[in-house]
Amino acid sequence: MRAMPTMQPASIIETLTAKLQRFGPVSADEKNALSEALDRVDEYPPGTAFVIEGSSPSTSCLIAEGFAGRVRFLPGGERQILAFHVAGDFCDLHSFVLPKMDHAIQALTHCQVAKFPHSALVEISEKFPRLSRALWWDTAVDAAVHREWLIGLGRRTSYERIAHLYCEMFLRLKAIGRTEDGTFSLSVTQEDLGDAVGLTPVHVNRMLKQLREAGVVSVIRDKVTILSMPALRKAARFDAAYLAGRILEEDL
Amino acid sequence: MRAMPTMQPASIIETLTAKLQRFGPVSADEKNALSEALDRVDEYPPGTAFVIEGSSPSTSCLIAEGFAGRVRFLPGGERQILAFHVAGDFCDLHSFVLPKMDHAIQALTHCQVAKFPHSALVEISEKFPRLSRALWWDTAVDAAVHREWLIGLGRRTSYERIAHLYCEMFLRLKAIGRTEDGTFSLSVTQEDLGDAVGLTPVHVNRMLKQLREAGVVSVIRDKVTILSMPALRKAARFDAAYLAGRILEEDL
DNA sequence: CGCGACCTTGACTAGATTCAAAAGTGGTGG
DNA sequence: CCACCACTTTTGAATCTAGTCAAGGTCGCG
Image (cartoon, rainbow over all chains, first blue to last red; front, top):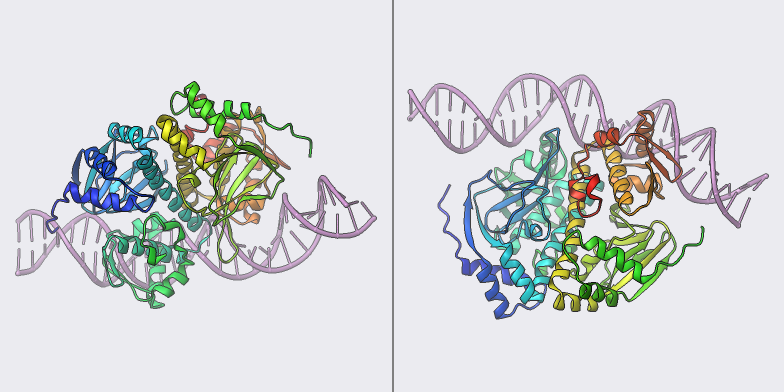
């Protein structure tokens, strides 16, 4: 793994405030409060479950760099991936108001994770109601993504689901400057993909083949290249509205 | 339809504060603020979509009486039910922080709906940060239910999904006193059920037959009777933890 | 009484899983 | 440096689950 420069807290806060401004204005005082709320930045190698199911975290995690997933297991061992999170995302901000984690959070690549103690978030919510609403908004956008995934699992074909996931990840990664033309890196196995879209790895592979043969996307190891965005959107029946809080205006 | 006495605002607020106390204490001032935030109570006959997809509501809705669903349609006409809401539930509190509804809300039975203007909620969030966090918590519990449904659609068998839905609805209705022994009323068609659990109505019917023949539940018109809760829980691989905010302690 | 909405069932089809095997990829240590 | 190993990808064949199509039955209501 190539060396990764540690993200500076200042730049993390910069990115975070830029994002929260999609909800509403963020004052200098509020920005400062966020800065002070950032306790530390931890690093995790890929595979680490850095938030455990059933735990009661006393901090919330913001991904500064890397790629993480929310995962849950059924008694029988089946796994469901509930969401993917990229740099700039809070991945368990809801644990600030929910007493127990109903799922784990796992680093899928090497991750840098900024920690915000709940005690500091309480202070923010006491002093800066508008900023508090902005954080609430962030968790509401996560819920909107959950709903879109519900529609996918409930009513989209397997082909559409894979296409939809690629659409979503492309636009989210583009918004944070992690794409080059139509290419982005998605370091997950086909088994991970299957656990996200409710399919077996074998069937994911077949649908990938179909997407490849239709000339829509090309996947080479972890590099995904979208050959035709209109074709991909159509294949996925994709409507970006639900991602308003996570992507660029012009991509909506 | 038999006449339904209109719920008194005072008793609605009583029920709401009781629920929010699961998150933390609610002071007399806070309770009073909630009372003043309740603008009016509207009634809707079954089938009414009283919140429209794509709209930007200026109020949030609390179900005072009845049964409602969150629904979304795909371009092809497929429908997915994203959540069910019973008396005492906010069904679109997230619209307070999210600019646009990504789904509609539909009355499934006759509903009485209490309306809280967003302007009043802004005031609450400015003056009562703790109460504001309690409302945030309520939306976070909704998100936890979304996640449980994601697991169902992604990884549970069709048989388990139906059993799981009955488990969830039974415990939620029991918590608000809408059950008699093991019986509750669920006024939805098998098609609605299918749109909630990602199946065709025909297949829902078959799974219902299996549940019946296994002696687990009996369904007569809208009356669902759970013949063996342990068997139902087992069939659903049900773990109530995610419902902590919606059900009684002793049912966890 | 007859109509429409919903439920129920059977026969057939399509989509996804399971099982199995082979080939590719990257990392490790001798 | 290369042989080996674990993991992942790819493909085929058989099986099973859920969907589709179609017909009859039940219930409540005008």
